[in-house]
Image (tube, rainbow, N blue to C red; front, top):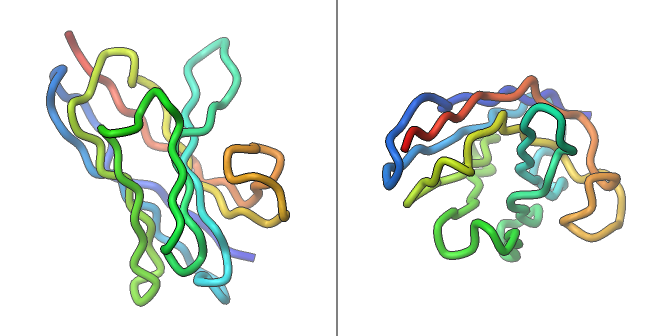
Length: 124
């Protein structure tokens, strides 16, 4: 298992950028695909981006494609989410999680070991 802690959230104006980090502790971080999800009150947690264990394959929700970039540094046990051209509709709590089941990267059911989340607020 891995334990995950997100950081880097905050308040930013529309059009601005933020970089989220997700630090992992535990064994075999590089053996896990990782994902970022987000959630707003009253809505289900939705997939944002995913990355394979070696970092070769990446996956994005259509709503963030071309604006967000997921990456990882296995030497630092950290996965990142670079968010550019932010929009008010990107406002949410962002969570990272480890993909523990052989299901598609966008499938929330594939993930476990969720972090506590970090708030991102984009003002218009």
